[in-house]
Amino acid sequence: MGKGDQRTRRGKLYRGTYGKTRRHKRKKAEQPPAAKTSAKATAKDTAKATAKDSAKVTAKDTAKDTAKDTAKDTAKATAKDTAKATAKVTAKDTAKDTAKTTAKATAKTTAKDTAKTTAKVTAKATPKDTAKDTAKATAKE
Image (cartoon, rainbow, N blue to C red):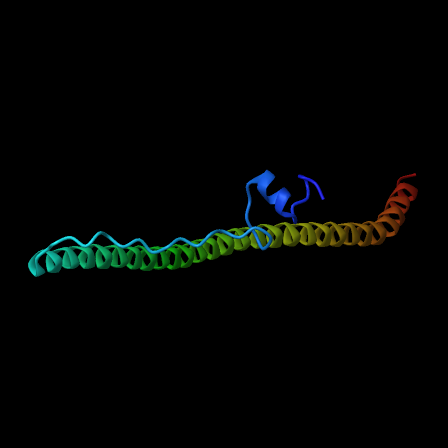
């Protein structure tokens, strides 16, 4: 295959990538030249290196723990605030809808009752009044 094939050595060389076909060379562990140092100097260097490493590890762990705690607290607070806001909005909407529905139903019922009552009164009053008026008119003549 040619340069464009990612699986061949030639393709790996062309792209500058590594993988199963083109492995990295292993680096030999470099050993510092044997210098004449005292035991005190070696102990100091070792102590400094150990202190730096432990400080790095401690800082990383502290940062991770702090981030986790902050994330948990933020999530809890956000959940509570969201729940409260949703409850308020839902309560307001429910109250508005209930009020509208009740008002409409009351208006319809009141209009129907008023119409019925007016019709009954008119129906009852008209024949009697007409009869009375007719009797009065006849008596006057």
